[in-house]
Length: 286
Image (cartoon, rainbow, N blue to C red; front, side, top):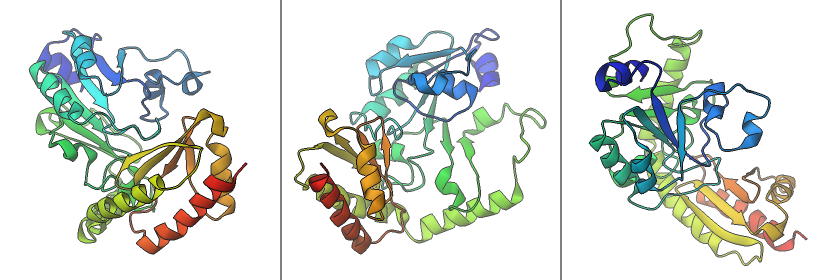
């Protein structure tokens, strides 16, 4: 991306900027926490990397206004996962694509949580028929067996790398690559995105029907679901602990959101089993 910016767009050396969104989460490296808006992630890790601009998530106008002649890329999650399963207004991704094209800015989607079938499509950006310049993937790419992640991009962007320009100790690991290919075969052959879409709609509808004074909103796509609680509920963590005692693992995020992200191979019977536990916890926990 650096060479693309300097050679193709003509950005002066060391002046490239990347636009990101508030409430983001892309990882724990120094550069990634440098554009986080969560103070906890940055505490104790300075000095931080510069060159990032932060705009509100889902705000196309703010994106256009933030672009300058030094803007190299816009990095965004199609749905914010760690941020609390925040779904942007429909049309935002398409607007972002057009804005980036108009200004010769790379559009990069962080699909590490949303990608590979989780949201009911292979990639979440496909809900708006967008063509990004790059995608980051991981997690599900390993099939749960081995750490693996990847950056997928266009020939124009990837072509700036020459042998020796970029690498890592385990980059191109043949075992990881074989596992990734096998995992992709399973996702496609077993139609897991389609399954996630159908079961996700069922799961969300049932969660929305739970009568609890704690629940503010249930949102998401496919099997990436967030249940936001009112602040008066006392935080999501205590409910996640109660669910764990019932044999159900869920994670709190952004204090008041319970995140449900079951395996894509889950069955409707298993969802019904989980719903019974969730309803009991949300209606009886004092």
